[in-house]
Length: 243
Image (cartoon, rainbow, N blue to C red; front, side, top):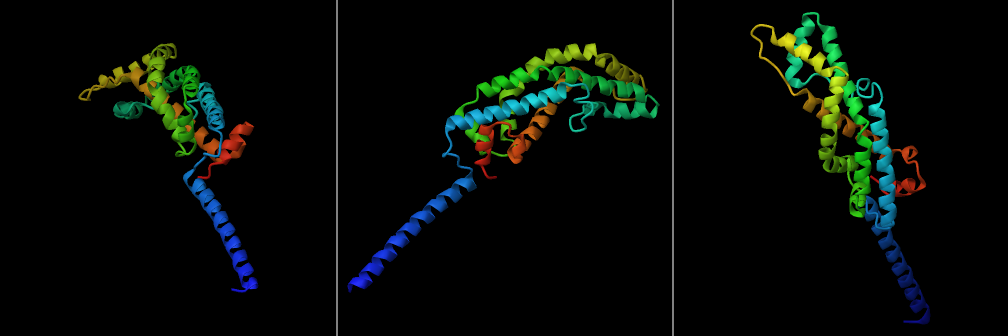
């Protein structure tokens, strides 16, 4: 092999090796994006950004739903009659007792709005107890990964806290009275199947369901819209994950 051919061969090998190495880097980057791999980020940054996002989302949700008409004025979470009492509602409305039914529905939602005021400390506690692994799994998880984390880690606590609050609230806003009026009036109708659902348990569960539904909406906003990432760290961490 003459000197010129040798130089050309060496140059080709150098370029090929460099290209292959570059391709490998591009491939690794593509895989990282495809799988949501965020190992290039500082784990502490991930955890901090997630905690910022979750405190923002849960606080906003609790504040929104605890306002007057937070439940009642929001069709997505508005509490209606229990399923087992829907027939009673329909029957009474046919008898012209719309106001009785409407008063009961309003009282359910006022009780839930009252209870929602106590949700924020429970969510913040769950955020503080979040591990770095929890945070990373939430970051690269589904669009409702954070919401599911809260369902797993706060439902029992929310139920315990909400239960006595709802009990007091339904008395304060007259839910027991209004609902009892509906039930008593319906149960006096001949030949109907008597109803007597547990109003406290029902309102408690619907209040919790409403909170999680609102949190899921806030989570989606933060994941999909940079305008809702209110800190520089949130911007950095969430923009690193391509769904």
